Length: 255
Figure 1 (cartoon, rainbow, N blue to C red):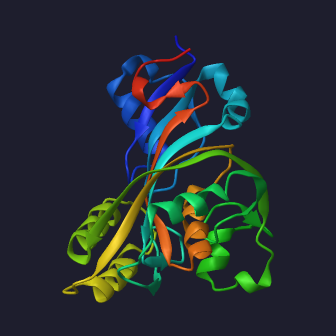
Figure 2 (cartoon, rainbow, N blue to C red):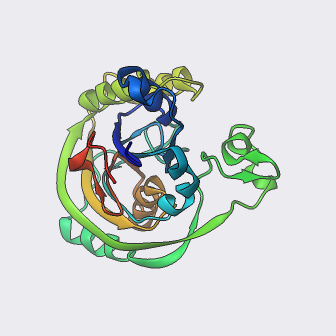
């Protein structure tokens, strides 16, 4: 029996759903204890490490491994979750940003520093997850915790434009497949009100990042926009590597 499984999480799936489906299709694992190391947001996809049996006791060791992601930043819109699964806060269509400016700005994020957890995330404060405080509009009653992270690489890959019609279609595709209570109906209504039957243009920049455990990529996307004084959010996030484990070897039983 292997110690580690490399599985792929799709947008909208949860790690537990992936493990359940894997067990259903691989009967030899039905009586085995399987646990994942390292969460991914509902809007994120990519490599998921699933530990088997006694290896589950080493979960924290695996979670400490560095990560490599490819992610896209949508410039021109910001939300309260820092990704598409949120209520729109600002819209600034047709943002003008050069490749040189993006490269210069992103280079400022390389290094070691304290990153504030996103308001819509699971770390607990006074016994409640941060997203509870955010939903209750009570964030002003607490101090949002921070974590030391390190970014060793942040590189711009491509730039492209997207119109509001195509963007809205993509937003619906992403949000409609998410299960659970993430304010989906309310959020889609807002996106429709802001973008439907509008002729707007936005900019999408694709990046590659290598970072330490616990880094919130959607927070990086938000902060880059803040630095440029342009609303922004994480449009897509794909985890490519965890330590020595690579997305290219997906579904191959590791170790």
